[in-house]
Figure 1 (spheres, one colour):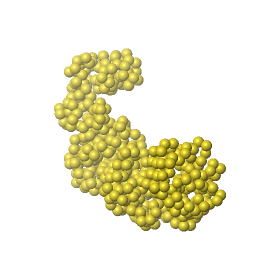
Figure 2: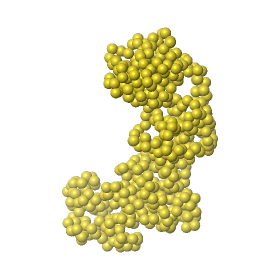
Figure 3: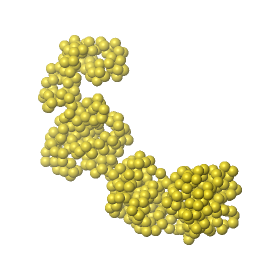
Figure 4: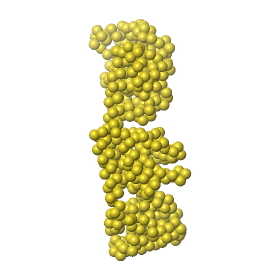
Length: 500
C-alpha cells in the first residue's frame, strides 16, 4: 500500500516538520518529485509529493496561495520545502489556505537531502511496482508486435484496460484519432484539448490537465512528424503516472512510424500514377478507375506545382494530407513538387502550410479529364512562376494577369514565335544566354544590379546583353508596350515547357 504523508512525518531519520495542512496527513503518496518550476503540476499526474527548494517559494502571500491552490487542484499529496537561510517565511495567510485545503506543508531541514525522502517513498511503494512493471512490459510487447505484425489493430485497447481508463492518440491540430479504433472523444473534451494546444502554440509541458464537466483528462505529447498527443480520460482508478504515460507515448510513436512506412509505400505508388497521367500513358477509363480508387474525382481536382519547400516538409507532406483525410497524388520532378488534390481551400492550405512559408505554389484550373493532366501541369508551372511575385506566395492559373489570351498551347506558341523566335534562334546558334538574362532582368524589375547578381555576371555585361536583346527582337526595353509583349512571351514559353 502507498505511503501516507503522516507515515513520512513519523519517519525519525527524515526529521520532517509539519507547518500546515494537518488534515491532509492521510493523503497517499505515489511518488516523490522535485521541481522548482512555477507550475510544477504540468509535469505531474497527481498523487506525488512535491519537493521544492525553500528559496524558490514565492515571497508574497498571493504567490504562495496560488502555488498551494494549484497543487491541490491537480491532486498533489503534499509540499516539502527544503529549508535554507534564504527561504522566505510561510505567510500566515498561506498557512491558513493550506489548512483549509488539507494540503500538508512540510519543512525539511537543510541537512536532509531530497534523495532520502525519495528513497523512503520508493521503498514504501515497492508493492505497486509489480503493476507498473506489468503495464510497462505490455507497452514494449506492443512495440515488438507492431514490428512483427504491422497490420495488427487494437494495440492500445489492452493498455486502456490495464490502466482502467480510456486512451486515444489524436492529431493535435484536428483532434481526430490517428491510431487504433478509439472511442469517440466527447466533443467538449476534444474542444478543450484543441483550445489548450492552440493557446500554448503547440508547446506542451510534461502533462496538460483538463477538466471538462467533471471529466478529468491528461494530455502528453507523442513524438511524431505531425503534431500528436496521447489523451487519457474516464479514469476508473488512480490516473497513470507520468512515467507510464511517457512509455505509452513512445509506443504510440512506434506504431505511427510503422503506419508511416505504409503511407510512404502508398505515396510512391501514387507518384507513379501521377507520372503516368502527366505523360499520357493511361487510357481514360483506366485513369478514372485508378483515381476513383484513391477517392479523387477529376472534375473536383486541381494540379499544384510547388517550389522552395523545406526538405522535411516535402518528405512528410503526405502524412499531413493523410492526417487531414485529404486524398492526393504526389510527384517530385526536378525542382518542383507536383500534387493532385481536391480543389478545396483546406486541401491547398494544408499542403502549403506543411511545405513552409517560403514555398511558392501554383494551382491549375480543374483537371476535368485525365487527358488534360499535361495541360494542367503547364498551367501550374505558369502559376507557380507568378506566385513568386505575390504576397501570399500562391497563384491560380485562372487569376494570372493576361492569361485569358493564352488559353491553349497553340496561342502560346504563336506569341513565343512572334516575340521571342529570333532571340531563341540566336541563343541556339551562338550558345548564348540572352533569353534567360532577359527573363531575370524583367523579373528583377529591370534592375541592372540585381540582374547582375542573379546571373553572376558584371553589371555592364547585363547592359550589353539587353542592348543585343533590343537589336534582335526589335523591341525597346524602355517602352511599356514592348516590355509587356516580352514578359507575356516569356510566360507563354513557361506554359509550353515540359514538366520536370
